[in-house]
Image (tube, rainbow, N blue to C red; front, side, top):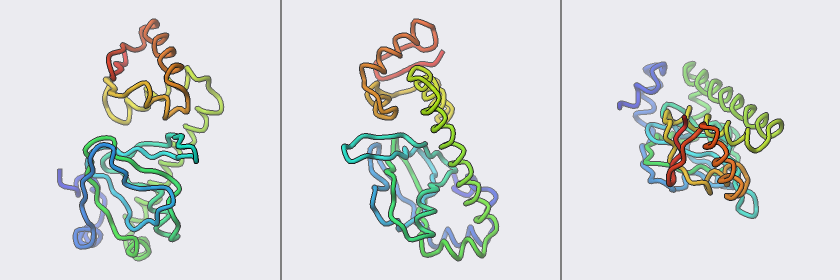
Length: 205
């Protein structure tokens, strides 16, 4: 797909600038795109694939924040670029992923000169904020079984797939739980005919 089809509202001058200055890069599943503490050199626009955005503690524990899909941008890279800050998140490709990387030194001029870019940045912040509110509500007000059900539905909505190819350990990492707890809760969901469990795949019913 032509990248311009993913961002149809960008004005012509902005398109020409991106075509001139941006670099297209490919990542394999598991490749780290952004590390905690890293200075941000580019703003990332996703063209293909899926990127997992998460926080990591000192012991290596993970906390899932959200996923980035084609047509979306990394709000954290935008904020860090504008303020010359280091990243406070990890970004990892979950499948074969293509991105456009726009040099950070262009951000100020793009915000000032191109209305469509300004609107895109604001909408990106807003959508990520709304998603984080959902995550916070989920953690604060739900039990683990409800959190697991919410996680699977959210994962399916974001990927557009009812057959979720994911391990119990990965879910446990994302929910800051143990594999044993997740496996037990998934078995209960299967007994309630909410899911069908296969090896490294969960089918939502």
